[in-house]
Amino acid sequence: MSNVDIQKVGTDFIVINDKLSGLVTITTEDLSEQNLSNNFIYKVCPNGEILNAGSENKIDEKLKKKAVRNSKEILSDKLIEDGFEEIPENLTKLELTKILEFSQNKIVKNNKYSRMFPFSVEKTDNYDLKVILLMYNGSNNESEINEFPFKLKDANDNVLIVGLIDINKKISPYKIGICEVLIEKAKLSKQLPDLTTWTITFEMA
Image (cartoon, rainbow, N blue to C red):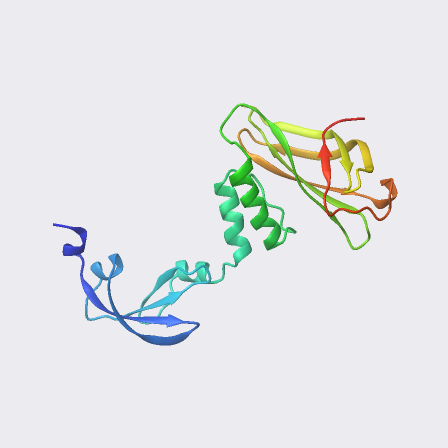
């Protein structure tokens, strides 16, 4: 006997954007555990998941928790699942999306090799530079990075800065750390660099 055979079928409400959309007949584990004389409200959450709101229109804790989750929280959870240790709250939804895509396509995980990956370089409103580096720790031990050799070139091959930069990051074994570095414009060789393309290498000269 299949799971479908032993499940009960009943009439349920579907609520979309807090408005009753209509009645549907569905087979669910929720219904198999409830009395068929009861109707149950289902609600579409922001991530597209449909959850049972509980009998007598009482929204359970699971629904409350899911309903208030935004896309940034969902992306942060996906990054944690992908091996990231900590997600800075100041990152935008677009940055989180691109970091996840970069990680899935370019970072080889579960190996014994540690590596630093250049991810992005952007100008701030004050014309400083915000640099994001992604560090995979392939060691069995926690990795602590304080200063790191760094060289940045702009689209015209101008060296904007070279030397040690402060990272101050601890990364657990087999985890990925998001390292944010702010480079003040006063330290740059050019005040208005062309960053349509850029090159980062980890060297001192």
